[in-house]
Length: 163
Ligand SMILES: [Mg+2]
Image (cartoon, rainbow, N blue to C red; front, side, top):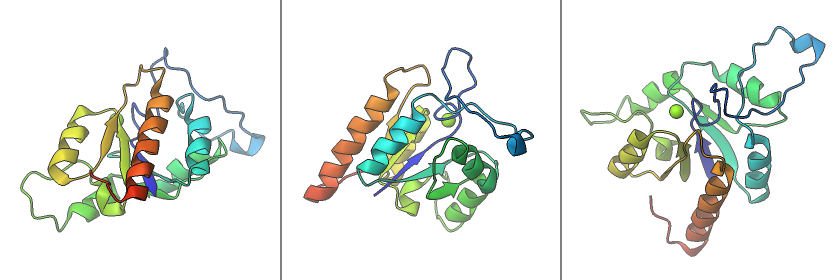
């Protein structure tokens, strides 16, 4: 099972009212510019892994895959997959649609994609992938993700999964 997350305004939130995960950089990482990882991410990833999920990032940003992996690694988190805009463009290259989607997580075998964009939810209906929208200001966001992931796990077990 693979779950993918959007980055901007989903896991990386710059708004001052949104709490971030603390990070203590060792001296040899002091040069590294850290972006705020949304509070709750570390615990959420651990719980998802305990339930057997692999975790990936699917973002329209051009941040390099190496940078993204490193950012999560600073918080002790491992990523199984990173799709940035460059990789996404390769994915949709052969898609014969005039209006191409901004994301296509089902093409990288993601059974659940988490995003802050309602537009991605609409794309999910058009391109047959399952998405859950979480608001950056929602304090209960990790519980929503967990509840949906449990729902998807059950559907997969029962063979009744639908996007
Ligand atoms: Mg976003």
